Image (tube, rainbow, N blue to C red; front, side):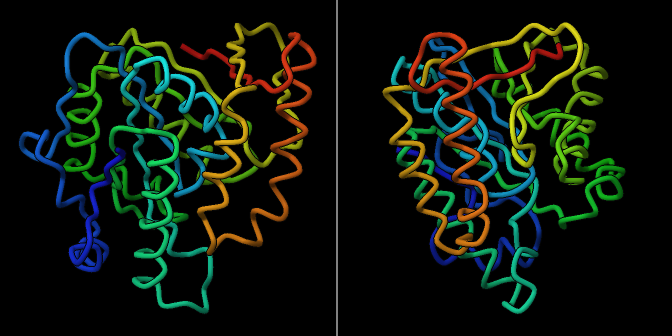
Length: 250
């Protein structure tokens, strides 16, 4: 069962404070504790649903293989519909993200509570830097999946920079793989090591998880065809029906 930092009646207070609260029992000082003996995978994204649009199939496959899947989401995505009260929309998107994580069998999702479009400014906060590092250290991931620096969305590029800069200061040797969401196909110029994951058996689960984001019907209408095409192209290239492709950057 997947868990998120927001829970039930505490969601509204969490959104208002912009901090991660109500972590599950397997957390110490607000930091998730990873259990020994299994590989830990961390997905770091900008908005709720990015974790599914990008490596959703890979998350489901790795979970089925017994790996512990964690997701870290920078914002609540409350800016996607300006005409809806931000706190109400944030609560909705947290709930949708929880439902999607349950389908993918993710272990835990942590929301950092950043404001969309202001990641670069908010990351200057020393408290955030410390917490971000502590979260990564506590999870001890063998692989991190995050946005590509070439993604068309500014928040996605910001998350890429923040993640890689933080890992450099930590002198982490964790493998880091990037994915694109708003680019039509996965295109990375130059010679780069790629990770190709066969998600044929998990692709229907990924699509079902995406459909949990009812509030994002406009984005789904635009991006679902791209999700199908990208998975088909990556799969065709390597002999699978559906695959997800990632670029290794560390």
